[in-house]
Length: 405
Image (tube, rainbow, N blue to C red; front, side, top):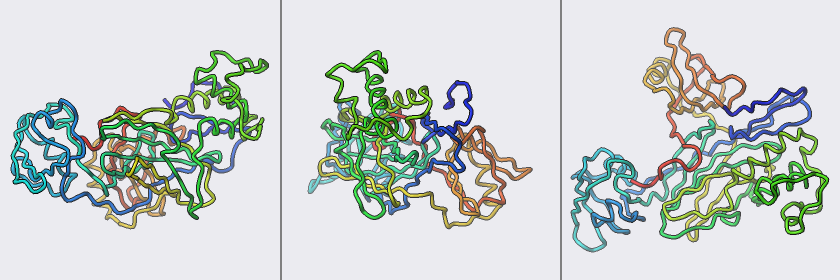
């Protein structure tokens, strides 16, 4: 459960930003929710017409079978892929051995016989999917987008809470070089084009709790195993436990100490950096931005000459309208746990995992672990304008590489 096993407190408003088990407590109840879920803006997505190999894993079936970086895949077992993204489906449907027809520059076409793995990745090679974008839903129920560029991929989703943008980011590196992940990899602007500072975890805790926040973060990072609030810090730790401008208090300095400690532990463990993204590696974590004066937020992740950009604003309703009988058939065909995006007739957007469809009462139900105190949400069919299946984004770095076939 994402809800902590603690005694309830009077006059405390709990917020669960991004469904990430990070808790903020304020001194009194709020008349309106402070958390605003961001939604990736719909932008053109075009898969390259042909799969050009940008990475081949060592000791993989692809390498053993003679596939090289720069090869173009023309056909799989005689079937021509409709575009680069279709190669994965053809590989997954293939048997143990597959005939791969490839082109190498001006050379004549070559046929390679490759013995595939039984498990993913079956081939062990990566197509260049530059220009392609995938819409998805995180395990916390937030809309996400994955942007591809050469051997890299960037997945982002986010919320705004307590004056901070919490952006969950996943980076995929299919190059043959390691990449140091730091704030310098990212840049961001608001709706007016003004630059937004990419905040460090220390700056986040300073903003929320002042110097005490920085001290708690230092403790959670292992710089000190114990910190007495009345004891001076060791000299070598001072730089990591002070705030710019000598800020003593933060926005939530009066909050319950237990929640502050939980936040410090979460920021220490869930922040994206510092880390090194190894070849064929995946990094997952949070980056932070100050709340913008206007939306959308544009976030750019740049690896050398490769830049991936995504824009995030408030959820936008789909214009398509589905008939009720078509909606009923759609929901009846869905499997439990399938992530869906639903646009209601009043324009509200809902995302969640499908639970069941009650055809008698014409009501669809969803599992909503981060949607509130209740674990399920239901909508009458008559209130739904349209629905669509989304890709499930696995939590943390447990997922298979998005680009590896």
